[in-house]
Image (cartoon, helix red, strand yellow):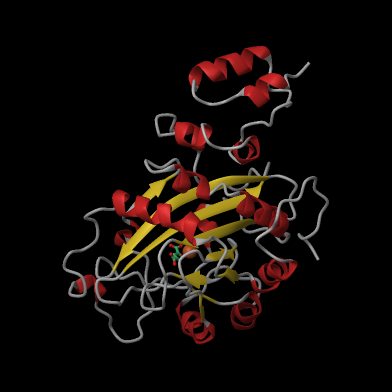
Length: 316
Ligand SMILES: O=C(O)CCC(=O)C(=O)O
Ligand SMILES: [Fe+2]
């Protein structure tokens, strides 16, 4: 088995099992309904309400965009991607640190079989009934995560997490997916794009990732899935998407954290542990990067970041 059980120091209490890791490797998807608890999700829900106040289509359920023509295969549409935000968020510590939750880092390491992982994507996403037709065709997400293709070994791929901040039912746009064995039967393992005639065959095999708030969906950039439409009256769906890769995997990318220094980084720097910050590319205390000069200059740049651990363990 690739991925689970590699030796690590100080193992935290995991929120996943080795069966979850196996399911992800074999099926390409795993859905864990209670990964995050109510106390963790409630403040994030409050933040979403603030971030997206007054958003959504007030005239829900009656727009042209939301009408369907028979069994038509869905398409990608820019209106599906409104109400996106990117880490760090103009929101509470809870929302800013959810993407870096130790249990997610721990799960990512086991899924990818990597000693160290890097958070390369984190965004919020709000969808509203009637604002767009959110039905998409089956696709894999690798197209805007790599210039090559998903690797054969998990360590070369990524894990894409979706966290439900609200309950996500089939009527509220639950992601639909096809397991790896099923998609292999339909289109083989030599194709990464499903043409129209295969879309309907995949649809016959689709499963729903519906779940309550707190649910974690883990998939990868090589697994077939699609967004589905919101049909519940006045419905809305709040989720967060996070992507992890093995540290040093330069083939994979999405956000470039460094290009947005004016965003509210203090929310993260002032509250995260060195292990969490390492997932954003900041070396651990004791790394050769940290010298008296680099600690002093970094501290001057971010005065409220408690850098004691870095200052105490300077490179010789
Ligand atoms: O949000 C979802 O349920 C899935 C959307 C999706 O797969 C995509 O936009 O790539
Ligand atoms: Fe996708």
